[in-house]
Length: 99
Image (tube, rainbow, N blue to C red; front, side, top):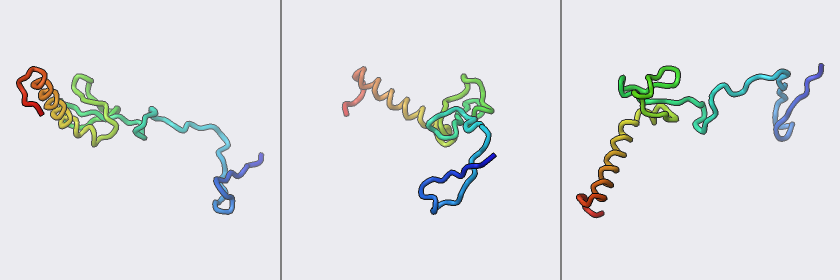
């Protein structure tokens, strides 16, 4: 059996690498734009970030989020959205100031 060498670009710029001779799985995670495919949640029961492998039932979580950092901001985002919706409700009902 002979092994072919594969080059990327100009062959003189790279060292030769052998190509795998068998098929193997490349992706083991769900494909997402987030990179690793992991999903993170904020647990309102435990007040912590949880991932797919260790998360509470959906009724106790916010998410999914693409990163643990985003999940940590979940309650802050909820407050911001609620404040915005309260302002919109006040303007709609006429009890808020015009901006």
